[in-house]
Image (cartoon, rainbow, N blue to C red; front, side, top):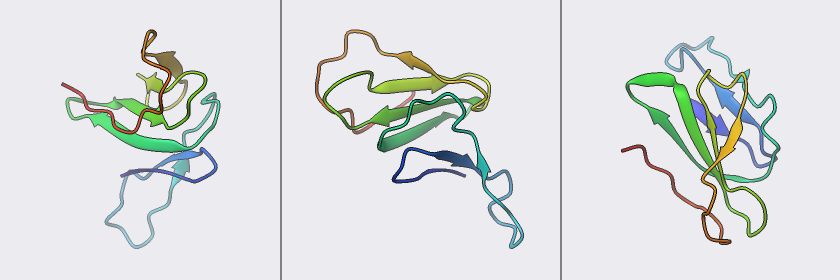
Length: 88
């Protein structure tokens, strides 16, 4: 289970069905901003994409290491908010 907060934090729960489960903050170097969508690669759960709904700056970020570090991807996207991401 992956969730994002209104203040741009990203969290992961490795055991969401457990009553004692907890969320782990995997925000690390993600620069913040409202997250509009999260997509997780079903074949590699460490590969996660998030979109930001804003007009300026980068709108698509990816981690390949489960959130230890994030990088902006999607150079050349139009200057409009990104609201959905899907992995093909």
